[in-house]
Length: 286
Image (cartoon, rainbow, N blue to C red; front, side):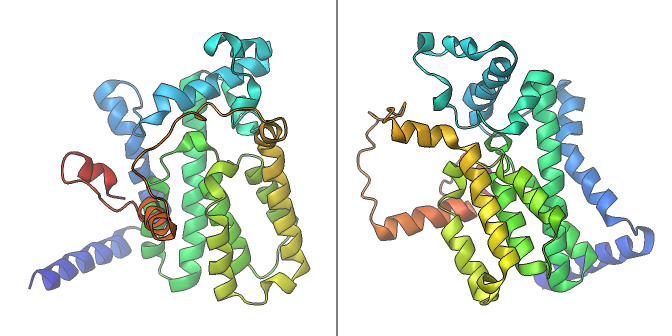
């Protein structure tokens, strides 16, 4: 009974959109913009959701931006100079240069809008190729764009989506695709995509078993990994010269990370299953 009522309401909404609106992109971009407009209306400023934004990550981007402009001495602010530039994962990201050109708020806002817009458009193309339903594709695209909340991590999530789109959806890879993956790769955090890459290749291989025989795709793979290597060069410098990580002495007790626990942790992080039944329940919902 309730399911039929729900389907009836959904059908009415769909029919209303089809009758009065043809530009679904404008509608869903307007919905996504509410993330900024509501906070501007209520507080006079754009608010952030993810807890690591203001206490660390955006601060790091701000100091990196100042270092671009004024030199590496800006890093002296961290532990009296004990942390040099190699500790900061996004030091070589071109997108971080925005923090040397604009204020912190404007630089973050430009990055956030650009990343969410790109994620929306790419997911729309993927979904529309599968089901040919424009309204549903816009809805799915808006959903995935809205969950892209860790903007400070660069284009890590977007790089995986674009990689999948180019391999599975596109028949031919042209110079523009190489250029796009080059720019995205230069802003991709290896720390965040490393665990996802094997699963991405498995998914692609299941769908397109002959893709690795295509020279265009091999070049595409080479550019992707080369640019990620360049963007995360400081991490490799730390490994080569055995620089200690700032969390080297942190020991997490009570965790037996065997294979089953690892898979469980991966699925929880991937799908963000709710793990608490208090105020954190709503935060865990995608």
